[in-house]
Structure formats: structure tokens, C-alpha cells
Amino acid sequence: MNPPAPALPPRPRTRIKICGLTREQDVDAAVAAGADAVGFVLYPASPRHVSAERAGELARRLPPFVTPVLLVVNEDAQRIHQALAFVPNATLQFHGDETPAQCLAASAQGARPYLRAARIPLDDAVSFDLVKFADLHSSAQAILLDAHVEGYGGGGKAFTWSRLPPSVNCHLVLSGGLTPANVGDGILQVRPRCKSLAVDVSSGVEHSRGIKDPEKINRFVAAVRAADLQTV
Image (cartoon, rainbow, N blue to C red; front, top):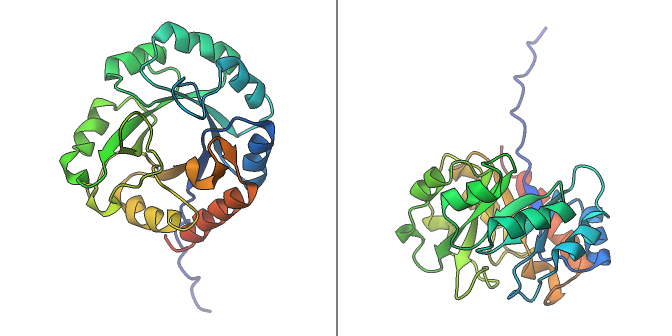
């Protein structure tokens, strides 16, 4: 009798966040497509801005195990705590110039899970010390990689993924300029460099600013799952 074949390692599963949601039907489309998290932008200068109250209304549509994320930019801790009263189960996403101490203060000394965005130069990713940044923000659940453009947010631009460090000892979230056409390549390039990888998309699944396209969301999710099948 032949010995049993060795068990194959489990394939990684890339978590997916759809960000910048403003409408009920877009929340429903993200959930139906299989998103793990949805993001609400509380930054007033963003075209996808919603109030904390509106974010709470939209978040109440979410089923169990789909995480709401509140994106803030250089907001004071008191206002963040007020926003969390509307979305009490939310993860925070700090997307501005917040220091590690400010992130900890706003997240109740790390008791509230949070993501910290790293703004990666478009044409010179090597100049950004991602290993040091991740170490400084070691209390973050993950470091979110976004393109450094004028203002805050990636502006639908993708930085050069291949220029990232070969090994970063943390969980990463790849963002910035992702679309159904390029997300698979991004996953294959970045996943070997970190503990685990998630992806975050906003403009790449829209047909206009702040208005999501259900067909693009479905194509994006399908592309992520196809990339998962190519790696072990």
C-alpha cells in the first residue's frame, strides 16, 4: 500500500476591503461579492466623505463577520471616539500624519484595532523605509500601503510594487490604484514580502467618484481569488 501523499500547505486567502462607500446599494454589492471589510471616509475633504452618523446607518446593513472601517485623517482623539459611538465595532484607519502616540491615544492604547497608512512615493518606493515605519507602528493591526500624492489618499495611482523591501515583518494591506486588471499582479508581487496580505480598493471599482459599480466589484473579487489560486 502506497503511503499517503504529503498534505499540501493551505493556500493563502487575500482579505478584501472595498473603501469609500456612500450608498446602501454599494454596501450591499460589496457584501454580496464577498468583501471582508468596507470603508467609510470621515475625512471632509474627500469626495467620498460621509458623516459619522451616515457611516453608522450604512454599517448597520452589514452582516456578521464583515468589518466596518472608519478612515480618518489627522483627526483629534475626541472626535474619533465620538465617531466610534455610531460604529462601535469599527476598525480605525489612520491615513494622515498621525504619530504612533496619536494612533495609540485614539485607539484606546491599542485596544481598538487600527490600520496605519504608509504613503509610498510613486517613483521611488526604495526611499521610504517601510521596515522602520512598520516597527514604529508595531501596535497597528496592519500597515496599509498607498501611493503618496498631493493631499491624502492614493488618488487612484499605483506605486512600484517591485521596489518594496523583500521582507517586512507585519501584515500588509495593498492599496493605491488597484483595479480588476492589476490586483492579481499586485498580490503576486507583494504577498511574499509580508506575514499576510489584504487589498483595499476604492476608485478602481467606481463608475464615478463615490459611486461604486457592482460589476467592477465582482470582477475585482474574482481577480483576487484567481491570484490566490496561483500561490501556496
